[in-house]
Amino acid sequence: MKMPDNAKRRKRILLVASSISVLLIIFILLYARFVFPPTPLPIPEGERRMDEFGTLQIYPTVPGGREWFINMQDPFDDEIVNFNSDIALEKQSDDSWRVNSSEVRMRVGTLSGQEEWKNVEMTGYVKMISTTLTTESSESPNQEEGSEDGDSLDPHLTWRARGGRHNDMVPCEGTALNGGLYLDGKVSWKKEIWHTGGYSDARGVSEIPSSFINKWIGWKTVMYNLEDDSSVKMESYLDINANNRWEKVSDVTDNGKWYADTSDEEFYSADCGKEKDYIITNSGPTATFRADNLIFDFKNLSIREIKAP
Image 1: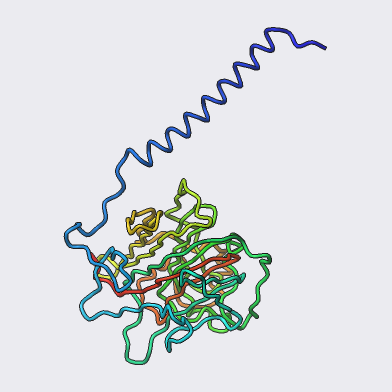
Image 2: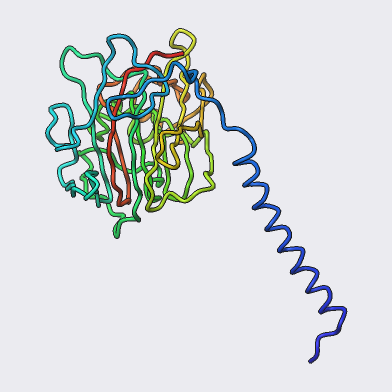
């Protein structure tokens, strides 16, 4: 049956209108990205410093504070670094290291007599290659980690601090502020009041209009206390073109009312003595570079105890 002329005309109008709408959306995104200036960095340009890898510091190291830099010659050769036991690293031609595992836990600990990690800036460069072939956990329940309310099925990096062991045998040690960077271009923050029934929802969620796949990017997670240790600020930064030009992409302040995203029955079953909106202002002996279901390269990882603004 032949389509009437007026129906054809309406169809053409709809197609043109749809095309114009798509182009308009693309234009708005590009305009917002490139015309509006990015959020200025906290430190004035003349006062900025580089770390030993030549990476820009967002905040200075506190006088006498701890600094840790990965051993790029052999990441395993470090007395305070612990990987989950089945991890293998493959050296790349550019001297970076590749990991292909559904679960990666690189824990940077604290020796006796050292200050624990608290107000920190965690930094590194990564190149996300692809998802892993399997999303099954390789660790038993009495070992490290576990799931993040199903979130760990999405390929992503999590850089976190302010806790100890994330272990089902000692659930109350598993506090953390978690900065997340996802393969699909999303960034966010979550907190974990205990392992694993104390996770909150995601805050500070941003969508980055640029692909992360097969390109080097810089990533920073920053956390520091405010108001005499009564609240905590979390910030995320990206160096999207790996040229040491950092831009803040997410920030969250927790001063209460950010609750664990579980039922009261589950949350209080661990008997950790914490409220459901507990603010993680405490320090912790372990800071962790974590990855789930992701093949990626990494280099120039560091953690510094920073001077809070």
